[in-house]
Each structure stands twice: as C-alpha cells, then as structure tokens.
Length: 489
Picture 1 (tube, rainbow, N blue to C red):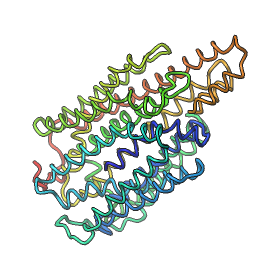
Picture 2 (picture 1 turned 120 degrees about the horizontal axis):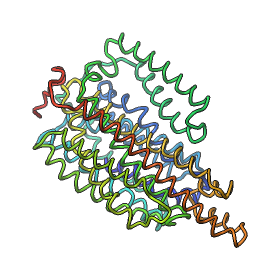
Picture 3 (picture 1 turned 180 degrees about the horizontal axis):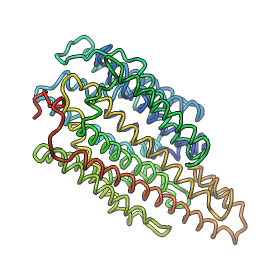
C-alpha cells in the first residue's frame, strides 16, 4: 500500500524531470501518469474476483510481482514509449494488488480485529500518498526521476517476501464461485474504452467524431455486459451489490475524493513547475504541497476516530464539502497569485480529503456479507483508480484548451505543452527584446488561467458527486442482504 501511494503521487512532481530528460509534451506526460491509472482501473474488478479463483494471497503476491516488473521497466526506460509500457505493467499489478489487500485483511484479520486492520491500511496509504510528492521531489532533484522506481522495486521485493508465506495458509473466509470470464473481459474493455477515451480528449477534443465513436462503443459494450451479467450464474458483480445504495454512495464518494486528491497534486505540480510561473524544482513544488499533504494525513487519523463514534455519513460528506470549497478557492488563481496565497486553499483541500477518505473503505466493503467482500473490494479499487484517471485525463484537456489560446502563437503553445523550462526559455530567446516581456506575461496569465479553470471544473464535478452521494448515503433502511456479518456493527 505504501508503494502504491508513493507511486501514484510521487510521479506528479517528477514530471518536469521526465520531460527534460526524455523531451516529451504535456500530452505524453499525461499518458505516463495516466497509463498506470488506466490499466489499474481496467483490471480492478477482475483482481477483486481472482481471489475466489486462485486464492487471495496468491493474487496479492502476483500483483506485487507484476508491479515490481513494471517498476524495473520504468526505471531503465530509454524512451517515453518504454516508460509508458512500464507504467501500464505497474497498473496491472496495482489492479490485482489493491483489492487483494482489502480481501487479505478480511481473510486474515489481526488480533485486534478486521476494523483495526483496515484502519492501519488506511493510515499507511494516506501517509504514503501524502509523502509521495516529497519522496519524488527529493529523488528527482538530487538523484534522478528513475530513482523513484528503483525505490519502489526494493520495497516491493521486501513486501513480496513478507507476503509469500500467506500463500500456504488457509483462511476461514468463504470463496464465492465465479466462472464469469466473459464478464471480466467485457468489464475490462468497457473501463478501458471510457477512461482511455477520456485520455484522448486533449487530442480529439471534447466534441469530435472520435469522441462520439468511443461513446458509441462504450454504450454497446455496456449493453452486452448487462445482458451477459443478467444471465450469468455467478456474475462478476452481483446485482444486490450494485443496487445497494450504501455501496453506490461510498464508491461515488471515492471517485470524488480521488479526483480531488490526485487532481490537485498533479495539476498544482504542473502549475508550480511551469517556467512561466514559479519555475519551481520538483522538491520546491513538493514542499509547497506540504500543507495539503500534512493536513490530509493528520485529519485522516482524526476522522477515523470520528467515524467510529459518529458513523460514516457525516465525516465523508463534510470532508468532500471542504474539498469543494478548497477547489473553488483555487479557481480564482491569477497571474499575480503567490505561493503564500495558495497556502489556505491547499490546506483546506487536505483537511477535506483526509476526513472524507477515513470512512469510505469501511462503508463500501465492511457493510457487505462475507461472500461479497471480494466483489466490493474490486469495486472500491475501480472507483479509486477511475477517479484519479479521469482527473488527469479531463484536467489535461482543460489545461491545454487554455494554453493553446496564447496570443504569442504556436511557440507559446509549444512552451506550455512541454514541462521543461529549457524549451520555454529557448522560445523567449528567439523573440525580439521588446516582445519578451509581453510574451512572458501572456504565458504566465495563460498558465494561471489554465490552472484556475481546471480547478473550477473539478470543484463542479466534485460538488455534483457529493450531492448524489449525500442522497445515496441518507439514513434509512438498506437491503438486508448487505447486513454485516463480520462482527463490525
């Protein structure tokens, strides 16, 4: 969990180092970041059910091994193409690892109980997610962005050695029968088309024939999937889970929280490291995120206590509300905004994210019967990765849609699409002396506008999902099939 957390956020501040080293555009950088998320999302449901077929511990160890292979490929990648391949392999490993980690805690609970295990898992993930940018910043500036992947490889080898003995230990948790290979393939294809299509919007545009074609293919896949799952004796995800409003509400809230957490880290890093704005190093950008990260980690600890005493609904919705306010505040960022001006909204976003995440896993998974644990775990992991992937994909499209309108023309647009500062300074150097000042001012204004617009769109999206989640998580009777039987009431 620590490796997945560091991997997800650490690369956000390493983007400028990667761009400078490999000479890639912002669109390519989004694929380097998003290739991991896209693949992880596509295989999360499959990973959740593999525990029923080959065993939860075996799935977990397999996920670690695949993630380690992806880390090795990324560490030695000679080009952006190979790096994207490594990230895709990492995503496949994470797609198996994340739901399996939930299932293992339910199958092999610690002496203090299942809830205690989930509490530790959540704290570790939130802490790693929070320190990821600092780790990425230190390694990128003082060693190399490749060192981030070498570190992950070492940690994964240690995790694999610790987990390997579990493969020979049986648990008392029931395995639900599943032979729904067709449903697994269709689900992976559907998620890949939807999320992959979102990643192509910077090139296709939000409204284009390619976008329409992707939407049509997704609709056909969804219709076929529904037909297959209705007829399947043992479907990939049972209907009682998909119609449980607590599960739906918690998973939608997870999507919203993921949009907020990764969207903020990734796009703030782009904004802070842009040569037209703060021109920060990777470490300086990570340091500016410390209020966000520290607040998220601290309040995840406090909110976990509140959730145990007050229930899940209030803390989750209050946290998401604070995230919306923080993003709305960031949406007024302008060319004259300083890093000090961003301190309070970043802190507010961190507090909200920490509070919201504390109760989501328990609500989405631990309210289910033992026979549905694997399905619920896969669904929750899918929601987390989909939210993060959509934040990067759609946000990149918004970010670029502002950048290409720079009045200085194509060179200014190019300088905005490349993370490295050298390209921007080269573009400035080609201009006459009297044009350089207006060029830099226009680039700074456009970069600030791109960041503000992206934050504003995220605020609207998170607000809508929060309102729907509030309705789904409302007090009242729920489906009796979801009554917990893990001693967690």
